[in-house]
Image (cartoon, rainbow, N blue to C red; front, side, top):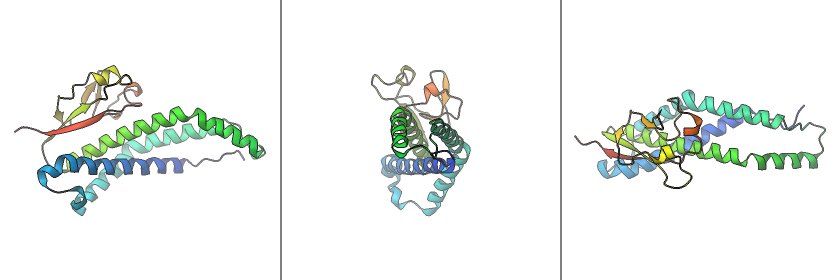
Length: 204
């Protein structure tokens, strides 16, 4: 029997829990920032019906998009662990040393995965809140303005607002929101993205 043993479902479950927490909190914050001043209804007072819609939206999002990503991350992680060559006969002190070196080598990967998932989950949560308000919102891509920001992301005009269901064109690629890969955007346009969204009511 090889050591360590890793459960793919544990990794996938952790991904789902993290995404749900990020999406719900960002949806709450976005609703309170943009919708409450107009409707006068804070997120904590929203009806159970809307909460049910949000839960369905998140569950559908998990099935269609997050599960495949989580499965890929889990499989890669398990392969990396198995490649360490740790067995049941490996001395405990040697086992700890190998794992410590492995964890240290994976810090960059963990940061990339965490940052990308956070940006992605926050953007999805924000759009979920805006769509559920039944108001004519428009969205704008807001990029970080520092030396780490991609040129294609920095070039996005934060004053250009489009309909919620339209794609942004980022570096020639279609994206619904920051860190979105569902429209075929490359990893170069997704990984480590720290951009966000802004919203405004469409003028009638």
